[in-house]
Image (cartoon, rainbow, N blue to C red; front, side, top):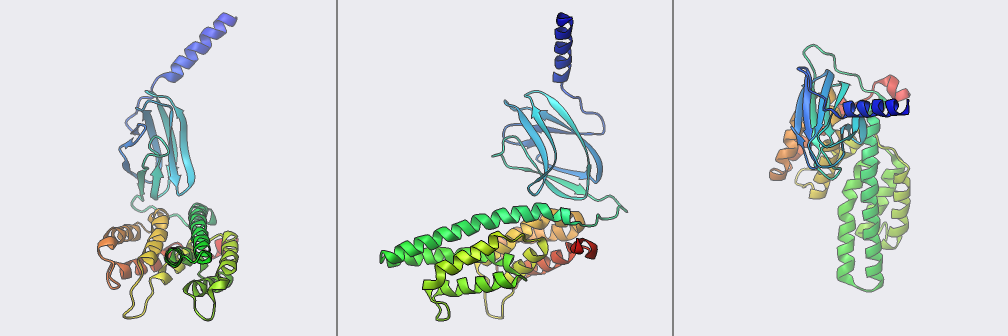
Length: 316
């Protein structure tokens, strides 16, 4: 019996090691340690079947990601072997892992079919972008604190040049944190005090900078920022008076919010997502206030409207 059982287990394992052959309706994906083939996929919404083949030299996995959330995955695909993944896909743009975690991610574009109703957003749809934005804010907040520490040390040592550089570095990081304060009276008030102390205005002397900044960072770390507030704050960064210019740091912060919310926008308003993506591509070569910057501000406002939660979801 033991011998028969051992033979049976061997036959079963050998059968499991055979590669899955893609059928006519399957979408074939090949992964290596460094890439996917193809790296960009466009498929219709609905049920989809992928056959993932490992052409690398180590055990790999394949994932479909919505922001930081893993929607579907197949793990432990051995070299030379294949696994099938069948899932229901909603319209939108997703990332796919391609080999090692350090490898560039691929793109999965899911297009709505003719006559198919657009899915209504729920609070669950906001979790991925909110978590990703929280991680971004945490990283920038830590960098801001490091710049302030360098400023304090240089000032204490009487090193004017180093202090000026550290102050400039800290000021350059502030726009990245600005969108998170939109519509939050406590955060807006603390942000204003930090900004004033950083510029050394009489209303907030620089001696108050460190404790004020620490209070701001503490409150910020406790907030969950949903897309509505991100977009309102990002659009506000680009709102300027005639004759003024938008700083590169403000443009970068607003662009980051737009980029973060493109996959969710593509699910609800694919035309708007495509237009915004084109604006982001043009932005480095057209940063004039009346050019791509204005277009980005308009798209951010349109994205805010498109991604607004239904009243029932807001109350939940």
